[in-house]
Image 1 (spheres, one colour):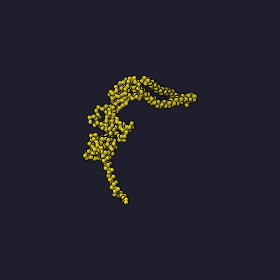
Image 2 (tube, rainbow, N blue to C red):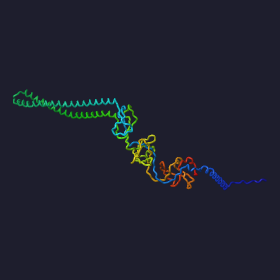
Image 3 (cartoon, one colour):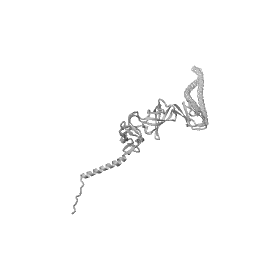
Image 4 (tube, rainbow, N blue to C red):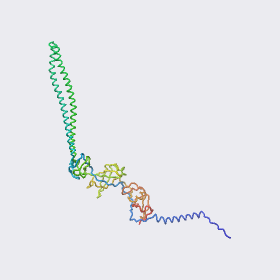
Length: 417
């Protein structure tokens, strides 16, 4: 007779025990397979850079290249066009103010100047003729006044005498009236001539002033016209070094064309191209430094900011404070540091290729044995091209891998060998 077997049941205790065993086996397998083979990497310590975290002086700065330029330049433009007749001075020569540099010739301009001078002389002669006519009018009135005075002097005593004779009934009324009419005529005529003379004198004063002013302006114009031809000789406006474009005898020059410049070479400045990102942080008075090949430091200061942005950058002018480097030449390039902050103490992490992989959020830090490195979260602040300012996550004396993490940024543990 067959016996029915009793089916075994899974108790809660057995299920819990079995699940725990499976989980333990899984953890062991993960540790053996994944942790050992994926999270750890052996790294040749000779191929990485290890830096020690330490406290030191920190200052924000950016490296830039400055172009040496004269402290001041005077541009030479052709005031009048013409043909190059003579090159008086070679480019690069030192000149004094007023030294003739380039001589032009312009036949049309010379003819025009002669015509304008002739016109001005004619106008001056016309003014002088007008002045003579005014004087003649005054002289004519003066002659008439002299004549009427003479006639009045004759008529006055005659009138008085005739009046007495008429009152004594010696002469007739007709004879008396004739004498009276002559007297009154000369009296009225004198009054009219006197008024006309006075009016003419006033007009003469006004017109003479206008004529004199006009003549003075014409003489100035004549002088200016005469100087037009002087513009065909380009002279040095200041003492300095003459620099010009390549000019040839017989070359045609247009009015306003740039012919060269005079550079004041007693001192120099730097014209610096700066990335537009720093436009808000560069101001007049800001300082910079230049170190020559022998290690001597020269200080500079921003004297002018040109805020116009061109191709992603703007320009600033800087002048040396104190000594100027010996031997620098116009057009030479100098590497400088523009200081963006005042120096101060900070915890420093040397700059390196790690930043491209981590963005400055974490770094590999060596343990006390120096044989193993593990990632650690950090927080960085300001930076320059040498160091980062550490705000959190690192302490003085920590050893950090600062070279590129491109080959091992996915690993959790680095074994140094």
